[in-house]
Length: 514
Image 1 (tube, rainbow, N blue to C red):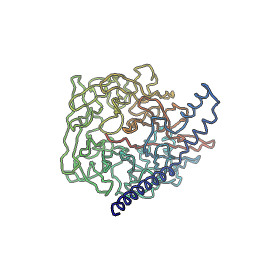
Image 2 (cartoon, one colour):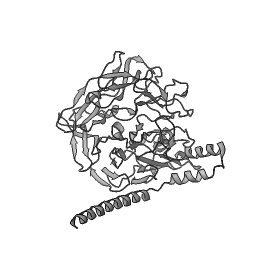
Image 3 (tube, rainbow, N blue to C red):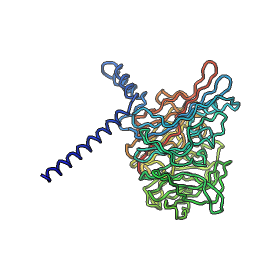
Image 4 (cartoon, rainbow, N blue to C red):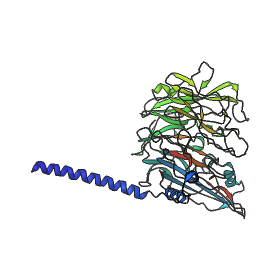
């Protein structure tokens, strides 16, 4: 009898556990309202009865939808929508909202700042931001109160940094509170982790890296140096406790007038190692370092690799035993064939590092070929390396638009992945400073190692739903299934001269473990 009671108890516990799991799953599904799914179904119902016309109609409905394509699902996407308005009297106001989107569920607003009280703006900043067609410029030009964000690898939560200390616009929106915060992906459980960073993301990076186990965030903040004064340092933030650990104590002073934060692009090489760059903007090379996350170790300088071809590889993080990764390399004595007079004129190419082996992947002889993505590893998905370039190797990119390309990790099988249409604007400077010409925004590419989906932001209009602005896109790694995930209005002008600007970037995404 006692034996049967124990078995009954175990059965009841198991049944109750399944019931609770089902309840949680049902609650999660119930909380997911998907407008795009409803609209897609309604659109397909209007298609004719059969044949090729029906197939074409249904495909057109899918391409116009903000739902993802089959085989290109997204997990957790966090992004900022900035809404700037300049009325006919020259008064401007700004509203910013941080949103989280899970799969095809409607985006959830997490925190809102503004709208600010309209004030005179003689500089015309609102209109200028609209003409640049780039939401990242709200951060870069010190108009944003949302500075940075990170999505943990499993997509269960988002960390974000909000502060008004860097916003120097007269119409700055007022956030409800400043600090670094954590929120679950369903919008619940918002809590403060500590004060905001004192280093602007305009000279750092918006997309903060998360550790592979999802417990920590690496970011740049001011901290004491070995010389006794505060300077930009790499910190580790524990998501559960909010405790911070300073990993570096460098003595370089940030030269903000040259957009040099002193430390660039921290990235987790593994759960116990963070890589970062240090150097001076404009120099042909800058130095790679790695440091242990225990807070007790000194950073290790990683000397540049110089292949037999004469290139200088920007970083050498392969010594950690991490997976192969792509990096940028330069030829300082070789002039770029597309030089536009901005920055050093040397050639940039993409290389693959696999421990001590170095393989040059590109030979475009241009100054804007880049591994893409943020951090130390570039973007690799499966056995394909994705990178950004404005080259035209196949005659499919005559407008020199910044596109995504891919190549195998063996160095063959070059493909042009995106075919973003040129909008007739001046070429700009390719993949370095794209504005105002259309193209993929530099360093925006993210590859989901779990679902296989590739995300990026761009101001082109490949699907007929982005007349003048920037949007976030998702697709399969081969470029098929391209969908526009956001539907911001970009820049529009009313009959009375009022200018409306709405941009949905920058963004952070759950790319999964490295």
